[in-house]
Length: 322
Image 1: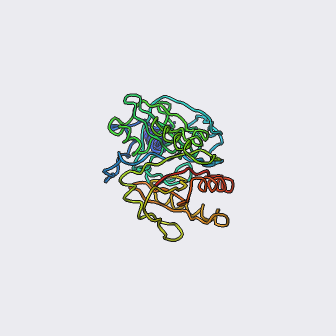
Image 2 (image 1 turned 90 degrees about the horizontal axis):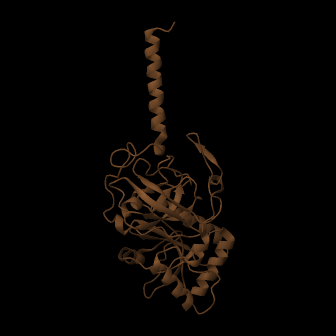
Image 3 (image 1 turned 45 degrees about the vertical axis):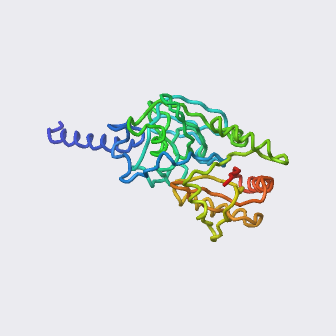
């Protein structure tokens, strides 16, 4: 017969087990007061210019094969999207912050709560998506580099920066529309709002010679970017480009964490060192670090280099005017 002492001991063990399960749930648990996870929240000194952090810049990146396999979390099966196809989803977005800041993402990168990124259960890693808040019509572009949220009531977890730009920090969550940005849209430069689309089409039309690929971005530098441009850092050696009129660069990505930007720059430099004379650069621009190559003398020269790099590495850069 079980004694009262044994019963209390079993009850205590059950309580500890349930407590541990709750802690392990992490992203799967619903938002607490303030709209973020237990023990999570904003950092102690968030940047004052979060609204000025530019959106993620879509480029074509090879999907991480390890993250394309079906997986199970908390008894639920998830089947990732394995190709770059149209995807639209409406539901509740939440955000995650300091509890996960600096940790590994599902994509093997370092989570930066001040970068324009997000976690999604099934979109390819890495990929890009436009997230639009239904209540205001405001939208941002984020880079999907993590898995989650594993909760039936939410469809996407935004970084602190992305949630801030959408006005979701206070309420903690809100109804959004998530639209995947396909490789075809990136090649055509048709992933932005009406102004960006018109600019991309106009620039493509003005090109003197046919372009093997279309523009994936025409960058209009912000004041912060213009101020940072003269201090552009080269990963292998320091040789910043000179000022003057707009210069043509290839852009491979934009990261909040400098180690991610330099990691990509170093990897690309090693992969293309035997075929390209240009060196990969890392340009700090406020809270974002852009991975660039150039400058090139003409758009045709840049496009031809982009084609060679894509064939050799599988990474297709976009064109940026700085």
